Structures are given as structure tokens and as C-alpha cells.
Image (tube, rainbow, N blue to C red; front, top):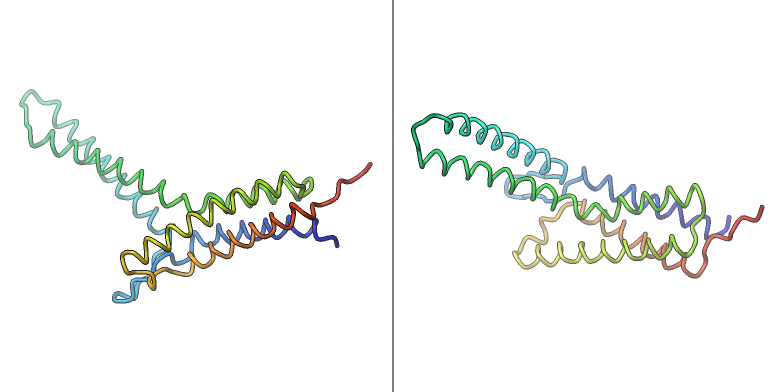
Length: 181
């Protein structure tokens, strides 16, 4: 089998590995012996968002009474802020896994068609974005002194990003040949 044909499966596999990392431990709190995945964080933030939206809705009903209550208005605004904040935090937790999803998409398109130079360039660009995200996570963890608390998901993402980027670079020089009909 030619190297260009293998690369699309490498990119697809790297993307799948990155998506699996979403469910693997992202951080490991050693004192509590607790491991938390991005999926668990997002599910927890979903609950926070839902509870704060329900609280805001109940306070909206209570605020519809003719008696003006400033404390109630303040609490309602805080509940809405908590809901917005948890929704934003959920979005932030999805960001490191976006390049992996793009690798899967590029890989599937390449399996259907071919892994040419366009696919290689797209893979390299997404890989560089992923490596940048990975480097930021590592730097932030080192800065606050919790670098050793990073879980296996971070390592899996590194393998995903670096593997797919390498496949993209190879694909730039050795693309899958065009099929002639």
C-alpha cells in the first residue's frame, strides 16, 4: 500500500484518539484521588446551568408581584450570570477537542475521496492549532504548579495533534495519487 493511502487512516485514527480523550481523565487531583474528564466537567456545568436557569425563572415569577424587591432582582441577575458563565465554560472545555473532530472529518472525506495536498494542508493547520492549545494548557498548568495533575487526556491529545500534523507534513510531499478513470 502506498504511503499516501495510509495517511488518511492515520489522520482518522488520530482524530478518533483525540475524541476518546474527551472521556478520559483530564486532571487528576492526587489529594482526593479523583480523576475528572472533560465530559464530566461539561455534564456538571450542564446541571449548574439548568439549575440557575430554573432559579432565575422562579425569581422572574416572584418578581411579577406588585411589590418591588431589590434583593430578588439582584439574586435573579446573579442566577442569570451563573447560567451564562457555565455555558461559556462548557464551550471552553470543547475547544481542545475541536482539532480532533476536524481530523475525523478530514479523514472521512479522504477515505471517501483521497488524501491530497489540500487535505494535508488542512490537517497541518488544524494540527498546529491543536499543538498551540496543548502548549497553552501545559504552560498554564506549569504556571500554577499543577503540571503533574494533568491526566491521560492531555497526553492523548498531544499524540493526536503531533501524529496528525506529522501525517499532514508527509502528505504534503507524498500525497495519495489521483485515481484515473
